[in-house]
Length: 443
Image 1 (cartoon, rainbow, N blue to C red):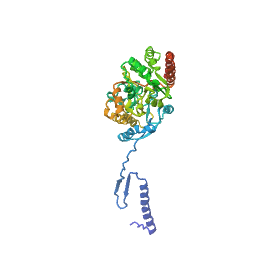
Image 2: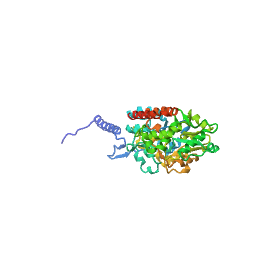
Image 3: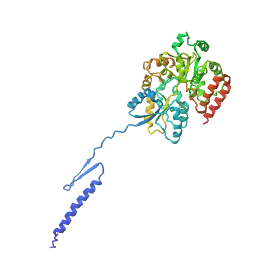
Image 4: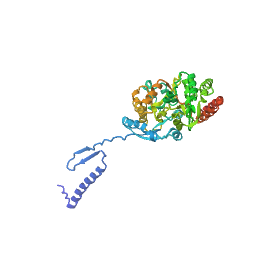
């Protein structure tokens, strides 16, 4: 029989203590080494292991905030604010609006886009040449798909304004303004028995009749500022009416030369004869008051003029009888490729293009629809009257002054004044404009 081994008390305590200690240490280590989503309950009495999963707390994604570069400062902000608030709700986004007018925007994006950065996710401009240069430079998102199903409802020519090499990279603003128009006071015409012209000869006769009215300084006020607004606008009216949409488009896109014989003919027959009826250059805002008090009868300007007079209902739009096309402002929105939120940016552009966005914008006053399906009763009475006169006219690609930009625009402005002071300089002016256009388009 083998000898029985005896374990003394001290040895027994070591065994028990080691076992308990191992269990404790193992339990602590297991606790800290567990998976974050699982808790293990370990019983020293049984071998059963129970897993309890930590509940997942739902996380609401933060709203995307789009930085929107717009052009409605100070007192003009209430005209645009309703669209900002409505689009935020409709699209479930936040918007950080920053006002940067187009002339101030040029140096900013010219330095940022080439290095792949942008001051905003969605950007507004009123210059065609700025948009065209960025589109051709590969800096803008193609938004051609946004026009699917919308083209039939846009004004004739509106979609074509934003097409470059077969693709669209911008959408028109929800509300538009007619850019190049002749305006008159209804009460002035009524007081002096003046009637609207039915032909070119009638128009010249009207100007002669106005020049004979006592107290009249000139039939047409020559509004001027940092640019010759009245001469610019009159040039668009004449080229569109007597040269036609295609000729005007060719000049705006640099496809037709300013020295072209048709251009010379139109300007020599219809632009040069008007210049003697213009006043001396007058600061364009103060010219509104002078026109209103009867110093002048006709003011070439944009439709924003209705918001700058005492009685907008007394303002009438004078369309030339042969006019089939009209120049609107180039107001549009584009999204740079460098936005962090391309889908949300395109959704906002879609909103600006939509019937819903358009109706809300024109309701604020001072705007005309970019679409033909906006209910006419949404427009204030003054805008409604203008809209009824222009809604069937084809929209020109761009006002000439904002078409090519740079050196060309500078030469256009200076040559307007030169031609007004000396109409015999037409040939040399056209040669100068063509040279400037070619130089700018090479850049």
